[in-house]
Length: 75
Image (tube, rainbow, N blue to C red; front, side):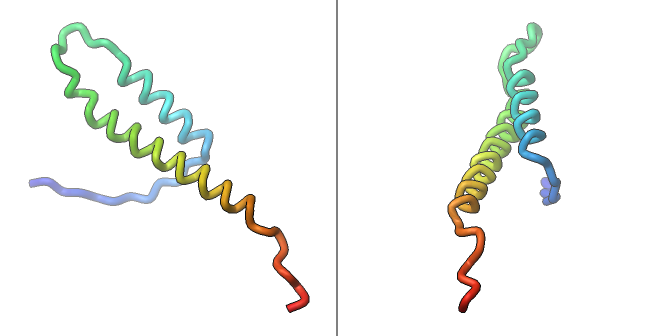
């Protein structure tokens, strides 16, 4: 039976980058006794998800920086 759980985990941008880099090193590892690289599949999926999260974070920060800091206080 397949069960799926959802968890909220809080990471800083630096921690996300560190995780992506660590996964890249793990994925690029050559295992001599393994013929196919199916063991890499969950790591590649996690890396893909983290890259998407990083992009979303960058987009959010960019949009936030374009917003005016103080809205019109005279209204």
